[in-house]
Image 1 (cartoon, rainbow, N blue to C red):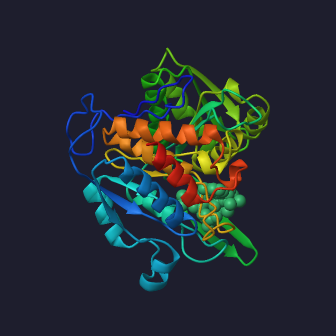
Image 2 (image 1 turned 120 degrees about the horizontal axis):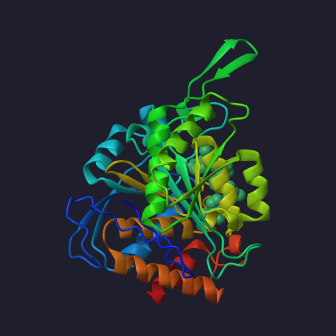
Length: 365
Ligand code: NAI
């Protein structure tokens, strides 16, 4: 079970597992002497820049992590005919935990998404994306604290498209009772464990009566088992309008894959942008941590990207590994650097490079 603490201070992403990947009980672990082996996927675009900054920060805490670096993306596709080689899956299956940078997916042609492939093949059925105001970043709304729970394996991302006749394309939206029930249960378990009061299921069942209808039916059935948590429903277009006018009326949002993808970027915009929102892809006993953002080709290779989103994903990962005190130190140092405002990246209104920002965090650890 994943836990997060809802509260005033930033440590909202405190997510100690009930069982850590080694199978040991989680205890009140704060700092261990164990070496963790973690699969590291730098990805492409801004991926290698932000991931190397994050690894430098994590290593500077003194936590014992052996990184098993794996390539993935366009260059791998050119060499091996797949953007994600079998060795990547083998590594994650062995280590049960990975930290991942973004991977580019060609638009309207080319290979299928390596990110989607990873989630589907490893059964990472839940995508947890917390969007919370950071005290140091001024935004239109205060007190935003939203948890997006996105189904991660099916829907239109099943990748089932074909040309019916020239000029007519069919793309299949797959919604199953099994996946919908599993993600609804994840959202309610998460809400219960973290003292969240409201789960809102997001849909378009007025139009897609069967597919989104089934998703809602599963959510309603699960909701009945969690009487202490309020359950509501909202049509996805209305949700978008509500979020940009009064985001604080929501708590945990439960969404299918496509709506979850779109709405999580919207939520990121409410709290300072894609540069600051972390995420975790969670399966029954595997977790892959990565930012919400993509490979940002417009700023790649310029040392401009904000590594905070991957860094906070790394903080989530450290808590998952039971390395709470190292996670806390990184989080505190990051908040201090952001609050000081002198060494922040361009997306947040500053002039610091990725490297300068990372070094400023390290100097405060
Ligand atoms: P994107 O998230 O890469 O970029 C959107 C905007 O946000 C851009 O203006 C970018 O410069 C900015 N941005 C993103 N991350 C930032 C950071 N850390 N610091 C500062 N600014 C940042 O989305 P886009 O452009 O739609 O997608 C680019 C590529 O990334 C596509 O090939 C897409 O398929 C892929 N992608 C991969 C994901 C993953 O690996 N999980 C997730 C989303 C997209």
